[in-house]
Image (cartoon, rainbow, N blue to C red; front, side, top):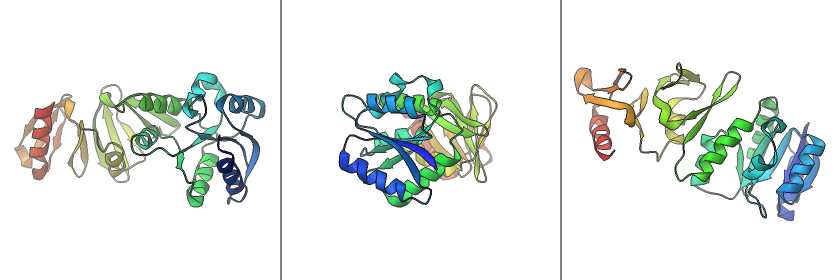
Length: 249
């Protein structure tokens, strides 16, 4: 049973969430229900919960402002944000690998969120929160949080050269490190980065950061040469798309 705190300023929403959590397939022990972030932080320090449900919009403070109250080493719990946000903000959550539930909360999705929190209760959250904060405060997303074997790695988008599909995995090549093998398929990253004009699918197995494309040729059916000299295939129908995107840079 996960020891849980709810931070929610709407009493009716808090009571409904409490009821849903008590009736979930993996019931939660509700330690406290708080109406604002300062009292929620006090409850966290007192009870040291496993899980916190945190409304992103609270009186005086946003939920993400929890980073202003707690040191990274104090964040030894999982967070599921509850939000009425749409579009841009949801993309920030997804890119930061941070769990959220869209209001009104769906019972099935709540159960999945609790189960995921249970599985991940020993993985620290602070890096994902910092990435989420950075993405929410910018007009354009700048960081991507990637699940790796022993936790998560935060990567600046402008350091990613290209991504290569490897079955249900994706190999991510950056300017800084050896390739990262991530347990998400390329379609996942295509959806997460949808709307970002610098990342384009060039082939069923590749997505590139066009800022690192040096040359586009029709050699061997179509290729892009990257700044690290990697020659990647481009499907015939994508050559013009890549060329047009390069002209717009």
